[in-house]
Image 1 (tube, rainbow, N blue to C red):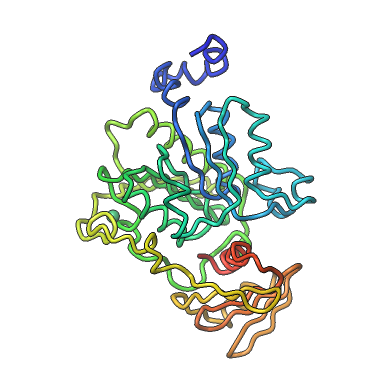
Image 2: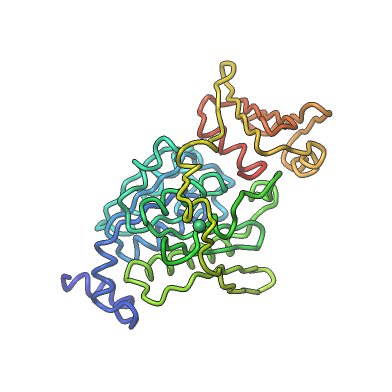
Length: 339
Ligand SMILES: [Zn+2]
């Protein structure tokens, strides 16, 4: 380590559990961040400042003005230009720490590219907003023995769980199946920047701890509510020997069997066939009315918001009008009903 590096990272080196050897390991570590929204952009900035060696940022979305309230890396010009989040993030991070090797990928992580995009990293950080991608990360993590840190936030509530394959339970041990039906999302239920920052900050602390070695690893689930000012730490328990992922090593998401089939439909629309998520259209109508114009009958619900028209069907299928980009369509769907 150079004298300049010793000075730059001195406050971190002074932290006894890190020291100079910990800082060296941080400087050699490669971290993959999947999703550069509120969680991912905070994680990326914190890790760049911490002096991590290599950061890969994967995000399929573009910055808009509703992101600025909580997505730390982006500014008004990014929203005006609709910059890809990964690119805007990399640009800003390079100003924060020019020594970090940053790779920005404007991509939707799917079963077909997940191994190529997120293999050979020391850690994967969850900055996603949907369970489908989280189970995909979990499959990849167990298969390649790569630790990852799950994180989620909505409203004022957040949850964090570090996952260390072979040493503790995986995501599927704790949550064997994704939640059924429409889920609370930040676009529908709102979210405070203080909870996304808290969740991401804890994910980064867990990542640093994993990078420097975590000899007495004990799996836990940390939940918090920043509005109520409460936090809980629950033991995540042992691995489930019957777990389909870390027990049976059946990588259903990575193998693409749970992949939402998608088709282009019409000149400016994408159809998402999500049959595993039946929707109660009346309940969904109640949730979506604040966002735009909703028309609903027993066969379909149509939501018109700026830029998109989304039609939902009771079997969970949806048509997103206003884009031919499958990643954008999936993102719109996820933000409205969860994923
Ligand atoms: Zn498991």
